[in-house]
Length: 401
Image (cartoon, rainbow, N blue to C red; front, side, top):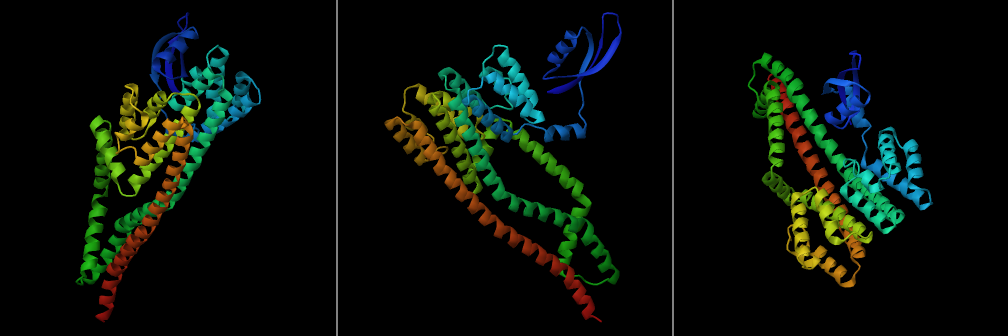
């Protein structure tokens, strides 16, 4: 929700100023008019840094959605009406979720279905989530669908937590290296340069190289930051184009170790989501459509969309997937064929997701095992070069006396 500052007058002509929260300027103007005012002007309020920080801190995270789903599932399974369950969650949820829960409750009490109420919050509830709730309402098994959905969300949280936990140590080391290197080049090395210049001595090659790098960094670091920001802006602009998005996503999947890890993570979430949807009564075709809309990689998205078109034409699911070996490995295609033959597609897909999850764990271990020694080697070489470049001229000066 955005904040809008408005200026309005009442029937007597008295002017009022205030702030209203709404999703758009049009809705904000309507809310002001509903209070009996005539709108003079209405503009979006500029948020301060502190308000932005507070909004980021109070944002609704996937973990919040997971907890909400588990609690809602538990209460509905226990026999509570949806309205009563939502009323309880409105008071028990954290502050950022209370408003959403309250609005969902108001919509449900007004006669809307739960899935229709959830659709109004696409940034909180994914299309997959909404499609599953809708299938549960249609089949009269909302309690079972919510339970499976809660399990899936909890599993995703656990899996992402493991990946992030394994990569956080190398990330901290790399960031620390850049910070220490920047401080050395901008603040420490120039002081040593002034010290060496007082002795008017011929400096060794490593020291001259270090001083040259330090001089460039110290004088031109704003330029480097500007060029970096410009490069980042250009990259984001390129990724917004269809061709740029596809090219960059193809490159990401081809990066050694990291690209393979990214591919396995996407396949893990894809197969787990498809298994959940098929097991909840959603057709494979609809499941592919929903999954394609939320996929993070355009290569996978386009492959899913094309597979959906092939299935619509009557081709087998396994054949449709086999046409895209760049997106779907041979194992997935073969297991889908088994699912088609046995009629247990949801069970086969969940087994495949576990296989991909195990492979992802192995890739994470391989990545951390490769990064840590590489970082230590680079760090050791950097420290060794600094020591040689700094100590060698001091040794030469002392040997002259």
